[in-house]
Image 1 (spheres, rainbow, N blue to C red):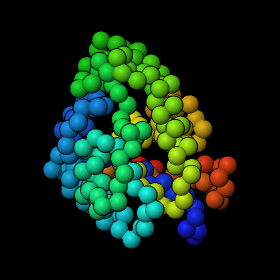
Image 2: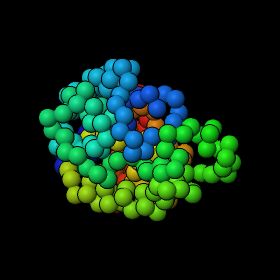
Image 3: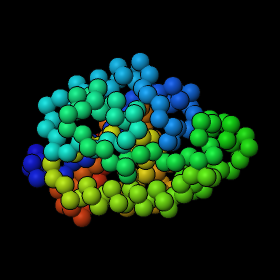
Length: 195
């Protein structure tokens, strides 16, 4: 059993949107949850019920804020700009198949997004957020996005951004970042991509 002082980060990806369903890259485009996404966010709230959160942080984008609100944490949230999704630049709104038809060898986690963020930029943003989180105690809920959540997990355990491509995140999923045996020099992932 963890002490109330132990940091446990409940990393939550927003619920389904029309673009997450179609497979379109959704970085900064501010689109709301689909009806199914809203239903999944409410169900996520049932999973979180009974957990006392010391802090609740959310991306400013509506899909994350709606997920937070429908999960029952609207009263407690603080918007954190570092939680916003990777800026997909010129590839925003395109599907992976469309992008790869024109750029067969492109990999977001290696090459970044033309006209958007590089791996170095998103790593710096994740590291800045991790520094803030490490100052907190107790249960922390963060509502974010697929690529940002994956990068955050990789950087939490000290991996380069390229390794984030191996951490898949479903919509309305719950993951938990913590420390092994509560040792703050041993960051760990306790739960990943649970729906």
